[in-house]
Image 1 (cartoon, rainbow, N blue to C red):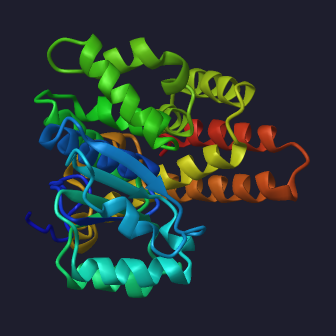
Image 2: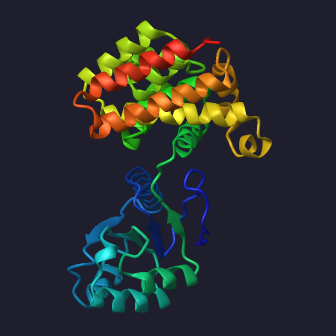
Amino acid sequence: MAAGGRRSAKSERIELAPVILIKGKEGLLIDRALSAIRALALQTDPRLERSEISAAGYALGNLDILTSPSLFGESRLVLVRDAESMNDDFVKDLLAYIEAPAPEVWIVICHPGGNARGKKVLDAIAKAGFPVIPAEEIKKDQDKFELVRADVRAAGRSMDVDAMRAIVDALGSDLRAMAAAVAQLLVDVEGTVRIEDVHRYYAGRIEATGFTIADAAIAGETARALTLLRHALVTGVDPLAIVSALAMKFRTLTKVSSGSRAVIAKMPSWQVDRARRELRGWHDHALADAISAIALADEEAKGLSKDRERAIEKAVITICRLRDRR
């Protein structure tokens, strides 16, 4: 059984091994890894016996009982979800087990990594050459975008960059919802999935986000930007999230506008291309004024103003008016 090294979570090849460590906190990646492991184990032995133990309430010797040869010789899959809470008995038994694992038994351990308890066990698993599947939290929009792109490629399909970006903007705060949306679109839409398909199927979630508001404001579309803003606020979008989206978009525009090769080289090509298109109608003074308006809205939304929604509305109107201003 081949051991696997650390690779990108999006391209991780999962294989069965006597001990498998899933390391990280990202729920979607953990679920996917567990699902793949279960499928492989069942494929290897349809009679598979599955069990789950608690590392926190573990009793000495329990691992020996679960991994001892069974009467009918079926393979076994043992799952430990709370390894960060492992007690001393679990540590003792697992360290001993790693030295002499049982045949046709696969123990899967989920651990968040970091400073959580269990470093000695994690080091022993890695040293023994057993697979460590990364499941680090995905926080950056670019990483979420890459996750969407990987899912589309894995399905042997294609999706426009703008469509993927729209899904990330609208659903990226919930990776499971984002992944589910991608999967559903690939089922419902034939051929290449385009931005129009995303709007048609997920209009309620896609149209009124901080990023779509920012896109409309950058384009100078005052009526549309304000309509989206009001819809977003009515449906519960946090005003600070809208300010954050505006700030993020203008930081990107400013980076590309600077023309610095060193800065641009670090950015995804699709982001640079999009920013260059959006910069038409903008000049440096207008960008600076827009950033000042966003900074003021941020202060007002955090308590400087009694009316946070009005503060953001003023910023959006200001940005729309700044476009094409000479």
